[in-house]
Picture 1 (cartoon, rainbow, N blue to C red):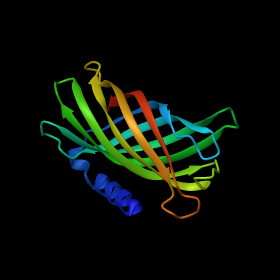
Picture 2 (picture 1 turned 120 degrees about the vertical axis):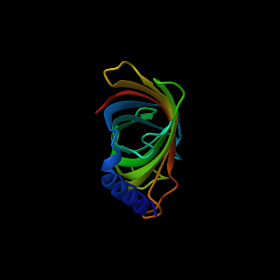
Picture 3 (picture 1 turned 60 degrees about the vertical axis):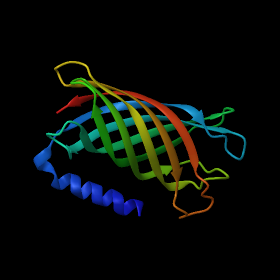
Picture 4 (picture 1 turned 90 degrees about the vertical axis):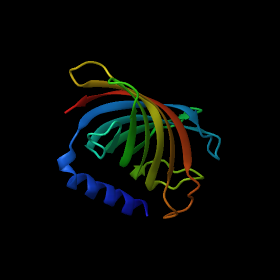
Length: 183
């Protein structure tokens, strides 16, 4: 079901070139609440997120609804210290912006996408997973040059849709900050 939703969003985004309002940039995600795994370690994923929105589905309206793509590289640290692990993948999602002024918007987003994790835990199998994200934040235009600053809070759940056992999943909360440039 997730793959079907991702495919439909991607197809719709490619066909929506008439209503283009694109932006690209990057964000850093710092974990603030980390799940303690069954083996007693805390799973602390640090995210490097690349951001690209395809189109504004509400172009010309008071508010905005963007389809976005978010490729990710994630470095996983454990507490107590253990070897480092990695995640990588990409999310596709919808981001709604409630424009409270010409330069400031409150945002809400939902996204999902395929990922790969290198860690094997007692609650999540190594390999192919999905990353599901729920995000809220503030989008601030910095100037007329098209630069923007984002500050977001995100809940993320990773699991593999029961493709392999174990599949309890891992949950994390993040503070995300970054910049984008209107194109």
